Amino acid sequence: MLRAFTIFLVGLIVVLGFRAFSRDVLRLSCVGPVLPIWGCLAEPLPDTLPGNLGLFWYLFLAGVGFAACYIVRDIVYVVGGMAARRLFPKLVAAAGASSEPPKRTYRIR
Image (cartoon, rainbow, N blue to C red; front, side):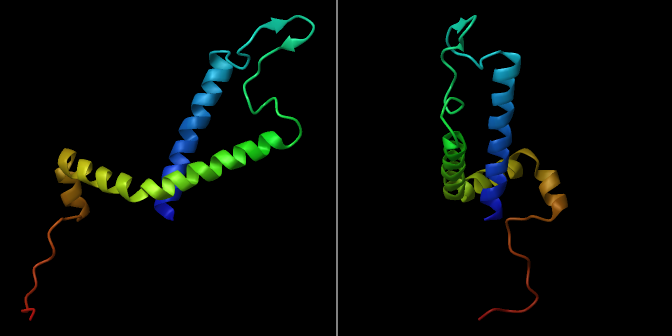
């Protein structure tokens, strides 16, 4: 569960960072024409949904995103571990994470 939550938090930070960048820096908060009296005619969903439906939309997206992270959590960590072993073998050896089991001084039947 902790692995899935970690992947979810990283994804959430990336999505919110790009959202803030696109709306504030690139000025993509209005994707349609802007009329002087009326304002923006085509704001992106879910900002235009009435009442609390926007909040429910974001909660739905968070649930689906967490479910996806829960499904791919082991794949992400195994691939990340393999990449770390190949790219940084000295750091992995210093951390004590070896792929071989420790040598035993006694026999196993």
